[in-house]
Each structure stands twice: as C-alpha cells, then as structure tokens.
Length: 402
Image (tube, rainbow, N blue to C red; front, top):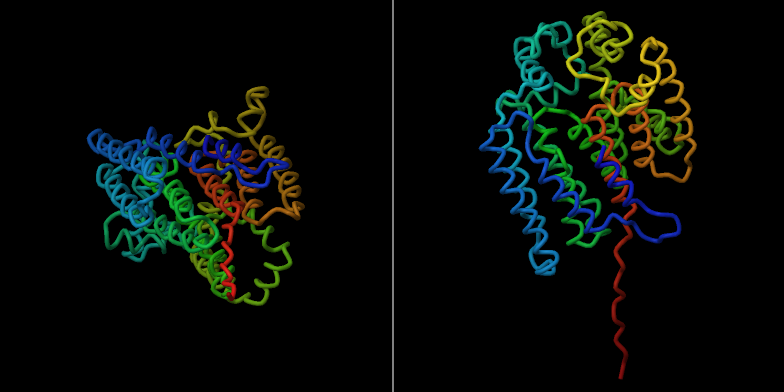
C-alpha cells in the first residue's frame, strides 16, 4: 500500500505541466526497497548477502547519476543484476512455507500424471487447511515448463519480469531520456517487496507482463496478436473479469474484439474444457472459493482477513456482529458505484482506469492482500510512465549558404 501512496504523491498535480515521478522518487523507492529485500522464509545468510549486494547496486546507480552524470549506461547491467538476485532469492528460500508455492509446484506433477488440477488432491501447507487450485487454467499452463525444466515455478516470475522490463524499454525508448528510463526500469524491477512476491510465487507480475504484451502490440497496430494477449491477460485470475467492461464499453476496443472475436475467445476454450471436465470441482474452486467467507463462514482461513486494509475491515470496527453476507452486499454496492464512476472517466487512459478499478476491487472486497495491492501498484507505475513528459526533439541545424 505504501507503494501506491508514494506513486500518488508523485502523480500530476493540477496546474502543473509535468509529472512529479522524478529520479529522486525512484531513488527513494530503491533505497526503501533495500530495507525490505528478501522473502519471509529466506535463510539469514542469503538475506544478508542479498541485502548488501542490493545496497551496493543501488548506491552505484545513485553515484552514476549524481556524481558521474550518467557516464555509465545502466540498462545492460540492470537485467543481469535482477536475474542474479532473483535466482539468489529462489536458491536461498528453496521451500517457503506458502500455499501458493506448494500448489504451483504440485500442479506440475498433477499435469504430468494427467490429473485434473481442479479435482486432484494437494498436500496441505497449513494444518487443517486443504490446498486446492483456485486459479484459471492458463496459470498452470504458463508455469508448467519452468517447474518441469528447472524444478521451481518461481523462475517463471523472473522470466516475465525481465520480459516486462524489455517491453517497457522498447515502448518508452524514444519517449523518455535514456538515463531516466534506466532508473525507471530499475525501480520497476526492484520495487519494494518484489522479491517477497517472487518467493511466495504470486502470479501478479506474470499477469502484468501479458498486459504489457497486449499494449505493445496494440501500439504497433498488430491488433490480432494484441487481442490474443488481452484474452490471455484475463485467463489467469477470475477476479480480473471485473475490469473487462473497461474494454467492452470502449468503442475502439470493442470493435477490435468483435473483429477478432475468434482470437479473443480462443484462450477461454481451455476454461470451458475444464468446466465440462468436472463442473462441480471447477466452479467450487474458481468461483465459490472466491467467496468462501460467504458460503463457508466457519471454515479455517490460511490468511487473516481481519487486519487487511479494506472497507470490510473498517465496517467491522463499528459493527463486529454484522453478518458476512450483508457485509459483502454492502461492499458490492459500493464497488458497483465506484466502478460506474470509473467507467465514466472519459479523459483517463485505460491503464489509469484499470489501476482505479483494481484499487476499488481490493479495497471494497476481500482481495486486499499484499499481492493485490502490488499488482495495483504496477498499473499505477505504468500509468505514471505514460504521463511522463516526452523527449524534447532537438531541431536539426540548417546550414546557410555563404
């Protein structure tokens, strides 16, 4: 949540002509990230070594900008450093006590033995709490090769984070000054708690990468491929369907989707396949599981939701005995109002609308966990990059005849 707050105070202010998303803010985030390097279950030696190396790298970035005046081209070093630190985090936290990691590790074994992930039995992570696969099918399709070949699904996050940085580099290479862009990309890769996200095997950075692929090909006017990646973006988590109206109600996107409807619907055939394979298990784990607090109010929770930053927790401070079903009804009403207001923001970029919609979804519903706000912050980060003032074109000197 602190990420979103820092981004918010850096956003454009009324009456100002430029973005306040400056180099100084990037370094605040980078040094702030250094204090939060590592995972919850990373061993002490790995945590210490990673922190020292990370601090040395950020210090080098700082010296290169303020002392050496950007004499060193940073981008060729940023990606290898992230790769090394990502691999180091995985190696020094080989078996985190996290259900998402266990599920994505085991789902590869289920697929290899031709078991349906939505009806298969998973080994428990927490006592008394059964593990199930709650994500949409494309999530295990995209992570399976990394588990099968490298033995750990978290390498998929490292790969897609690097891919995202490369895409951002291509998108903004002729729009943002090179030295500034390098710092922005370093900030993107090393956002506070990025390695915590990696250790816990949270899918959100991977999903964001598919949105960038959609945006990249859309800007290149390769619409068929763009629409395909948009469909894949919606094929990881079912809660993302909440932001689908942003595309359906927009005339430009709606026209493109209708024109390439087969391409857009093709990835959803996988969802239909698993739905037909075992309707009860699929619906229970993907839909009803999202609202477990309503349908199964007495079930044991693996994550405490009474301390989350959300509207529901706020209401419970004043009405602790309110029934969960009523609380969800009130939250849904507020979410509908907020969503309707966001849809009416005609002058806002679709990326900024997605940020607002995701923030509203996390705050008003029960999704206000760390990874959701991190995912929201990624869209805010991208939105601020899109607001960055363009490079000033230096006019060519016109030679005059003597």
